[in-house]
Length: 217
Image (tube, rainbow, N blue to C red):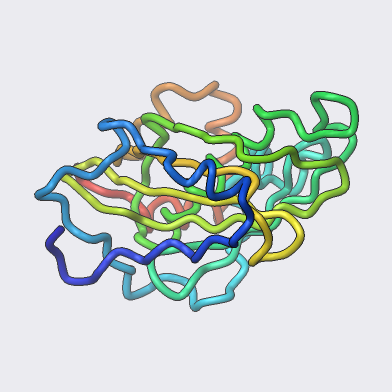
């Protein structure tokens, strides 16, 4: 892979036998950067490492502070083209008795991966998301997620993530690989519900952030 910076490497895994048995998780061709992809570049105005990224929209199920039944992820900027997040699994998030619902865990990965937009200052949407569930995540667990870019090819942004329990270096519970597609802001204003679009655009902070991320694919 060519480019001005090298992709941020994934964190090292533990020696847990169960983790080794899932280590062969191969991203599909759809989420694997092509040979001529380039490395993503951290924007010069990206938030400093450790900075809380906040919510891109207060009603977002993944990060919105007004979504009491949502995930309310705490996402922070990483050192490179990467972010970290923490997600507390509440009783409302369970699927099987006492365990996090797989769809909820997938949503947490998707939201964290999407937060890479803050680092690259691009607007993009999920094109494909693949998940590998390594071990159960109990209710009341704190899931530590790290997401990083794996390459860029035109409008296509490739990325990956891992979620760990028991601490940032704990055993892996879930992995993800994803393809995001860069879009213009018209993608949201054209397809979103009108009253929600109006409310978002009436919020000066949301509007300012959105314009800062506007791209020309």
